Length: 200
Image (cartoon, rainbow, N blue to C red; front, top):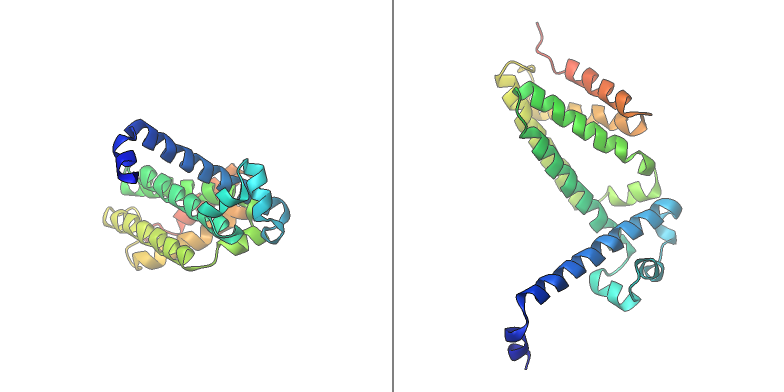
């Protein structure tokens, strides 16, 4: 019976169901993060997330086993989006140095955008675990590649390992999370770029 049913299910229906599930998942992630940011992850329950999302608790458990898993998925989704944005920025026209600066500005903007979560219990929860270490390494490698290109073009110094310079950039721009405005974040990028200039 199930084989016959699978044969006759229209493709449009299958795609609609998949789209619905994806939409529900996105809503669950956003709802859980908003609640966790407001009151702290430990005070958020699966029942509350289900109610706020408009689904049953049983349905929610089909998507995630617990609140921590939801918040981890929320963070992983954000990381993927941020990396995609940085990759897109790096593909824009310009010299290697200009593209590097554009990526650093985009990264500083991302950090600044996360300011409401900075230092919160939510930030502490989602910034631990293997997925964060892997994401940080991916970001470091990505920046190291841009720095290598910029060094070959003479736009940044070539007397230090690109991986070390990438670490310098990431640590320096972490401060964007405490800055009051986008202009301040851009000034931080300018200062960071000054430290990357070739020594004369």
